[in-house]
Image (cartoon, rainbow, N blue to C red; front, top):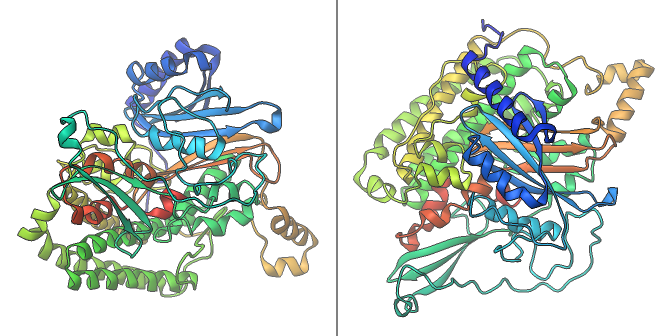
Length: 566
């Protein structure tokens, strides 16, 4: 059995404490410690950029995580600009809050962290807060829309849909103007299943070679964050599995785990282990989907069939547990949906043996193929570029950066499980492919260890603040009936405050920032989806490639448009 006592590295604790003391000396009363891993700092608009630079250069917060706007119109104020940074040595996250107005332009962070570019565009698109040197263009909303949809005072009005701007590139300073004028601008619409969702690639091409490129997103924007702020917590759960249908339990885990920590809800050990099993099965499914799309781009249809067979075998096992094909709600507040049915553990172990054999057979045939390596050993993303863009997960580790949240900030029993973190060297498509292949084998090992040592006991908490009463109790107990009505009428109400919770999803750091005013509805929900940041680095990767390789680049990054657009 596992040793369930989590042991932290003393050196890590000392480093964190030292950093906190240094930050307290620098920011004094402007600093608030939410947890040992989450720090809040309030800065003024006059020294916003200076403080960000200080955190990056002097305190080691060199990884950009997120940037968003929080609406304070209900309080008679304007907005708060919130920037989230990561110190990769101490694994601490800092949220820097700065009051801003939609009447004045804010200094841009994109020169300090490139990953802030799309975030700042989104801030204008959704709230009307503009940034220096950042174009005021719709990035997720349709062109021609009137107003800013995430504002609390937004009222939808009819509008005339406009065509997207004709994309062009400013003159390239690296080449003479006469040579630059010979380049053509191509728009490649990918709406036919070549990639995981609708995207448009805009490229500056000369002699069939891509000189510069960028992505246009927003074709699948559903306003998830707006929806979450207008329904109660109980109604939010079904929406989580639809953001990325390949790994629904990852979103459920990130969301439920944050609320449970915030409410200090105890989760039984058996529920923790089963959540980990579901998460790792989702990781395998998502990686198989990525490999299948790469195989399809290279025209290797027999191997695509093999990946689909493996994915279907995972769906069959998950269906036996949940009785649903896709978007299944396996995780609930306080635990998991139910205990495993009879014979399910044996089927799951048989699935692991089948997948291990199949993945080995398929990857052995293609990984050392000359054609495979010639097409994939290109499109490099080095470690500095990856960190600057805020890229995380397998795409970051393929660049040689050893950072996996299951190791550095382990939750549940990841501290007690033996597994390795696969790393690449050059950050090429081939590295991104190989890292995902090896992560499949590591996930199979993790699931095997969990099933061999599955704890006994309950699969749900007994905490009445989040527990849904059993049906038989509702019919016989008046207290259970009242609790049942309260839960389905208004859901769980969070006390006033804020929190951020993140996990290592198949594509990188997946996080939820939640701010509650203590009412039935949440004041602000912000998703940190890894694809949003991996999509920006397309600009650096695509240079020097050919137009026909664009889907291959996108699929090697596994850009899931449902994650990007939200």
